[in-house]
Image (cartoon, rainbow, N blue to C red; front, side, top):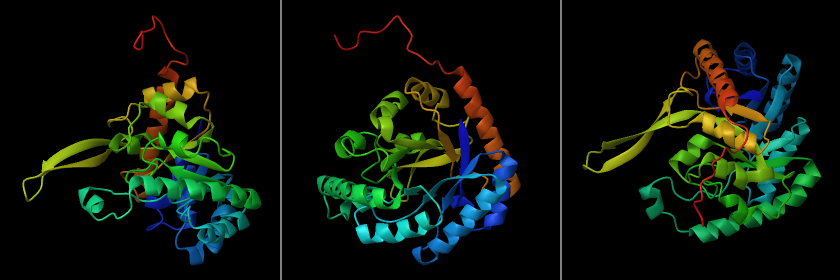
Length: 288
């Protein structure tokens, strides 16, 4: 198991040196670097890569780069990342609707956005080979990749060395949920790494009296996501890769963030140790 920190929740308050120190103090193995605007991305990526290398940390991925259906945009981001020696870039998938209000204002249908996603991914095959990059999409609420079911629909015959998926169990709990075992089985060779966080779902009435569903962050062992079940799924599929902490409750406070991540690593290791690594009988005959 390898652990990293996603710096998006840290970068607004901490500089590169300070974020590196958080990683070292937390005991992780790498960094998932969040980039700012494109005009600064090349210089930022070089500085981030150099600081990681000097600290003995691996650059897991660069994130926030480019709309996958805009090849010119992807090329500019790829220049920035590949020029810094990066090998993985999270790209933006088409946005559908975050809530009812956005759904009312979305002129494109979901099948149209799926086609835009698929066409963009096909174009990325040649670009990825040219730059030596793997482009990854996150299972993210409100997008065409909210569910792991998007993989057989849009990726299955593409090269998993060039496109992949960041599996975020907490995100899929909000939208597009598939049980962890099913999710990992669907992702197959396209599973790049995981985002780890936890949450609970809340409900409250708004000013109009309508029930509104929201979420609140929780420590990794105190939310709706059972990471022992996640580890069971990953063991069955022989995954032995990266777990990147994101959206930390304590961020950007360095000391509290370090404590939170150390707590999370301890929990993940315990869940991994407790999770079975094979199916157990007697088997249930659901589908006779």
